[in-house]
Amino acid sequence: MLSPFELGEDIYAEFYWSHIGHKDYLKPNEYLQDAINDLKSGHERRNFNNAVRNAKSALHMKVDILCRSFCGNEYFRKNMKSFPKKMDFLEAIGIVRPRIIDKINKFRNEIEHEYRDASLEEAEDFIDIVLLFIEATKYINSRFPSDVEFYGSPVSREGYLKKLVCKWEIGELVFYYLNQIKNQNQNQNQNGLSDMDVHVIKVGDNRYNQWVKYLINNCD
Image: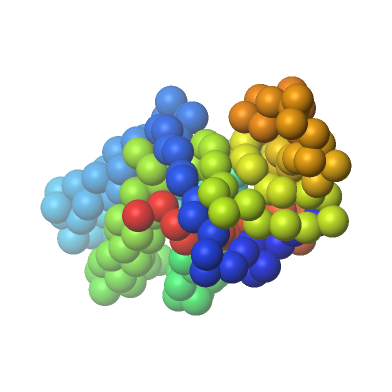
């Protein structure tokens, strides 16, 4: 199966985009605004702690939305039961993972499970880091990859790669190859997907991560 690293410079890819499929994709911004309002409303212990909790909700909801959007609900439920695993997946597909995210999540655990109070500075830092993460990934909301058509016919043993269709809801990437034997037959309709060989890569396969990263890196 052809990998994105094997695409030559002579290959032109035409990308198609849509909107992210989750109706609550803006909800993390609301939680983040709640965190900001918590600090504006006072400088007491409860304000700092509530700010951290709301910022945490914003971060975790944003991470969940991104993961579900790129791997499908079923894979998400079965394989992404911890925050680190979710972040590992996002990093593997090319979505930014500031290492500070792991540190603030550890700090949030201390607040919630070890009954430690947050300071003003800690709450402000938490909010700022979550804000940066949400801002760094918001382009995906309106530039969510759907299909790719290839021109210049990148060749592999499967044939000539013509199209990639993203079936995010079930965690599949579907590749359409024009078989080299079919290509020699003048009676074949080279533009019809029905005349092509179909190959599928599913989430969980490292090649899936490579191709998703390729899609995300070419969203501009």
